[in-house]
Image 1 (cartoon, rainbow, N blue to C red):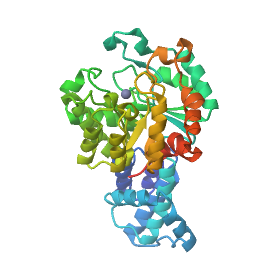
Image 2: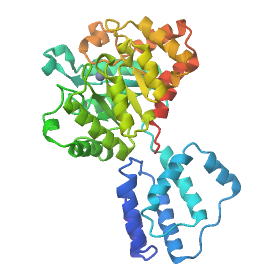
Image 3: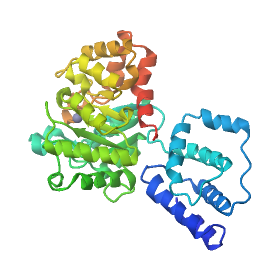
Image 4: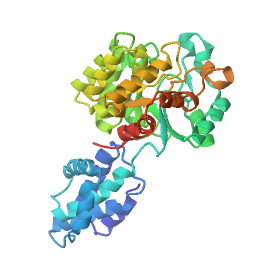
Length: 410
Ligand SMILES: [Zn+2]
């Protein structure tokens, strides 16, 4: 995306400075911060600028779209978001646009929204770490997950099994390593999506103590909108941000508030960590208090809570939950995970759950005798099938639910 084309139109008096400035504001104050993909928008921007110009001069408006196209626009599942986005754009317009112009702009906005998806089609592991280093504080070298060649081997197998997206929960201060992950991404073809924000105590960077909520929020927004650590690789969501066992410390609350503020500004998804599945209802209350779109929130590690009542309560309130510690049988056996999923399916709530394993240690990997990233495909899916969970539900758990949660919407 660049403004050169609009600048040329302005210099040649095809559009006025007033219109050029309006376009600049729309792009930099609205579309970029909301993380729309502006890589292929020359036609749209030219069209919009010309529409403004025509309406300012009060002459020669566009012909109306035919009824068939109008109908297609209204039926499109991005229509509601396009309409809301148009409403926000209007604040910057130099004058109101004619109704017939408006319909053309909707058409462009629908395409723009469709092109702004973060996930590619295919199965998704919703809570993993390509690399993470908690070894310092945990005083255990096993918690430095840095076996790149082995990870590439296992990720290639994932790709062959139909996995296409990995939501990488390693965020600021816990060993996120863009160069490393980019290497894995390029070698495997998987779409590895980066998280941003801050994990939980005692793994928070020191500056979380001194910076304000607004300042922390700016850091998160910058990673979502502009890129991580001076690269142009943007974070794709906020997470994992966490609370401690049975409580949320003051610093953790600060991180949640900064994340909520950033999510509101950018329309980003938030994925959380609960310690052993505790304090989830309190996380939910916090999101509700801030009027968040609960379908853009995933409360993590709820399988490990072992508490089906709380899980049902969370889902019925509208939030999504992660069964994302699959294979950690020492915490909670997979046979029970499957039983819970059956109950959730029966209750009609299977569209609110996403799956993953949360591999964080070298000893979790195959070469060290661990379950490995492919356990979910090789072992857990067959377990679900054996217990009668339908193929349709399994597709929701690994595919369409997370696609829905991540779909760009306002
Ligand atoms: Zn976690």
